[in-house]
Length: 490
Figure 1: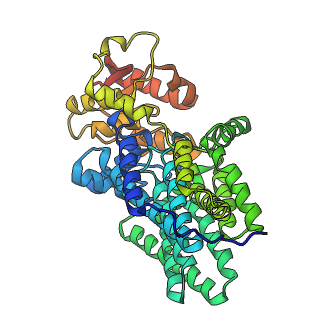
Figure 2: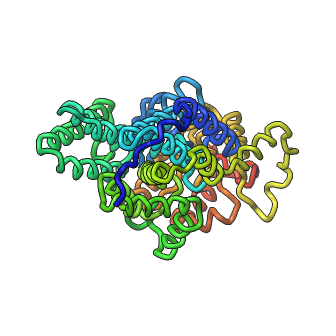
């Protein structure tokens, strides 16, 4: 077995890591700001709507709108609206900064563990893979960015800890990661198990930090007026079972798993990770981190692209350690290794380039192609236009309901929905609340999609309710962008 890590060749040139991280941040901004038609994405629209209701109207999360995320991400988008109105750029800029901090701490972990070269390699592996389409590269404003970054920093403080205070700080940061995303619990478990190998006191201090952080976050939520039972219900319990976001067939899950892990850039990591385990000869804290992170996303089971971000720190560090060891052992010129990694791992940028082209040379208005068969789903930019039309043609106090998966339209209307389930959710709890809200707060305007996907993905009882409601109490005002616009009869 070769020594680990192999001694570095100090005569070889190494670039400045800060410049590389800044370069990745700029590339991240290009990818994220020139994507999704220059509008809020589907998930961002939900979080912005809830955050806006919280900061503009005092309607706290889970009473002013429901999604299965933490109040922390709603606060990010609420602040974004408070300072800049309805926009998509601020949350992505903030997410890029947070992600860059995580990238820096990946470098610090690698450098501390295996030297400067391992640190540079970790920057390349992690920085490039974060930008992939396969890992949700353009979705830098999502909860994974915050949860993963705080987990990385928690690992760094754990690994560099020299006293009990450092273990407490590690736990505290890990608790903040959990506050952003519940799957951070698996990173916490990894650090907890690794800390048992050090001392009982260190483990207790780490646990104390986690509990202190969670307690402060819960108290902040309580004093903000958030019902903790609602937090438990909507952020955890109602995410599993019939009609939830995780309610998919086994075949669907297997296909999605295959697409993400066997037909994407993720396969580039596999030989390097195998080399790491062969060289290392055992499962250490890093192997534990990877195994538990994979367990976490497998329990959710939908294998969304952004979920893969939770695997990237461990995969990148393993790959960096393996490559650094091999280049040092066999005196391989490191500059050619850097170049090969950049070539193999560089992300596709076709989408931002296409959107930049459309910004410079806008398409001719295709509105005449809407409201005639075959009905198609309007793109993100058009959904924004529909929302803006509703805003201009309704009063500020009017309630507006967009049937189906209409969060992007809803957020740009800047109007309140009559129900906390402004974007279709089909669990038992959601449907009961939806029917109750709609009965008590009939909206002034209802938008009903004409494209077939609406009736394909929305349950029959919800479809029937909306159809009967508009037939009884509303008249058809017009068709716009493949949505029928209904107004309430006086």
